[in-house]
Each structure stands twice: as structure tokens, then as C-alpha cells.
Picture 1 (tube, rainbow, N blue to C red):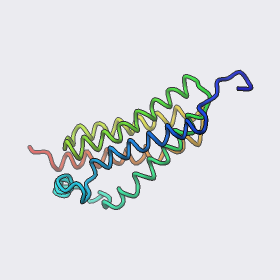
Picture 2: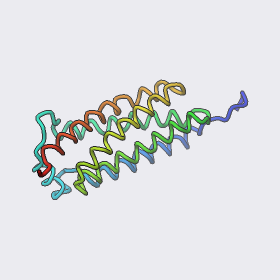
Picture 3: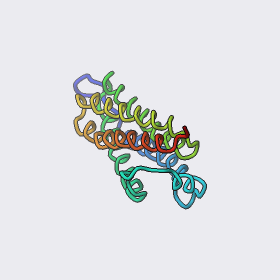
Picture 4: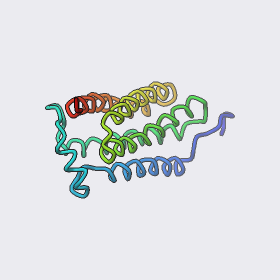
Length: 170
């Protein structure tokens, strides 16, 4: 603290927090994955009427880890910034979005609440865009790191809404 400002977290603490957030989100997401280790979830998901623009399962499996890792790198960068109301708001948005990603998998895959999960996806898209906007004035690389996630979540909201429409009973 050479200029009188409070410093951010140390690299070790920031790294520990970032890895813990990523690990917890991945653990919850993995618990609900529609893969062979969860045959009931997989069967239900495969039976859904999905639109033609639904990416193949392998794309989902490849995209999510990259997006979450990018967001985690952004979270790490924010944790390293000097404490301020804006930094704290950005961290709250990052932590909230990270928790909601795991929560979304619980809602959609385990509880099969497609409508609620569609609202959650939209909320995450808006929250991630708000995170990018809030972080922009603090750390532009951190802000840029979540922009692909915001775009993917907007797409996921559209996709989830279409799955809901196709699978709703009249």
C-alpha cells in the first residue's frame, strides 16, 4: 500500500478464492450433467424436443469450461484490484453469476423446471453484462473475460425458451 489505497487480495488468496469458486460451480454442474454417469437425466434430456440450432452435446461440454475459466480469470483480476465500492459490486456480480450457473443446471437438468431455468438464464445474461459494465472501469481485461459468457448466456436463454415452448403441454 504505497499510495494510501487499500490493496486487493494477495495473489495466493485471490487464486484460492477463484479456484474455489470455479471448482464449486463445476462440481454442481457435473452433478447435473446429462452424460452417461447420470442416465435418468440423460434420458430425459435426449427426449426433449430441441430446436435445430441446439449445439451438439460435445459443444456444450467444450464451451462451458472455457467460459467459466475465462470468467474465473476475470474474477481473479478483480480480487487483485484495490478495494472500492465498484470493485466490490463487480465481485458480487461475479460470485452471484458463478453460483447461478451451478443453480441453473440444478433447475434445468435435475428438477426439470424449464421455465424457471429460462428465467434464470436470462437473469444470468443480464447479470454478466452488468458485471462486464461494472468491471470495465476497474479492469478492462476482467470485463472482457466475461463478455463471451454474457453472449453465450443470451443464446442459452433463447435456446431454453424454445425448448420450453416446444415441450410445454397446452
